[in-house]
Amino acid sequence: MFDSKYHETTLDMWTEEGGHVVVLLTDSGLWQQVLSFVQPLHASHIPIWQNIVIVTAHKPPMSLKDMINGCIWVYSGLNNSETLMKAGVKTADKVVVFSGRPSSIEVLNMDQKTLLTINYVE
Image 1 (cartoon, rainbow, N blue to C red):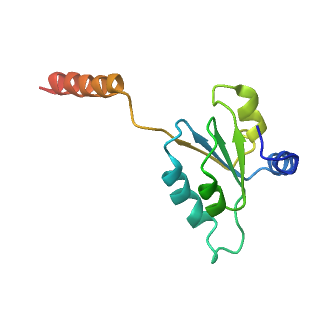
Image 2: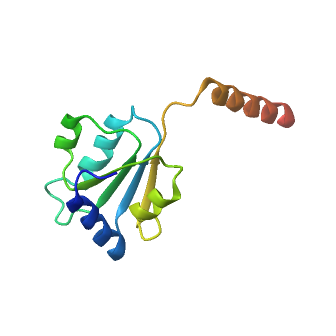
């Protein structure tokens, strides 16, 4: 679930204090989006970095973890309420969800809703 006991202990402190950001990843192919989200929050000109917890069912590439400092990674599925509580969603300042591409069925449903709306307006 964690990279080390140190990370688990640190996460416990962060969740007790609150004010951190929880990032939930629903898919494994979102590494570039995570990097684009975290880097500005941990830029060198920012005097105080906000604590960030990243929850994912998939371990990220080591190269990504090397580029992102000051984050705690929690490896578990998002459908587990224990995981969400451990990540501190109750005390978080913000919870951000990154979702992958919609499935073809979801895309079809989006089109159907649009068509129904257009027909209703006409």
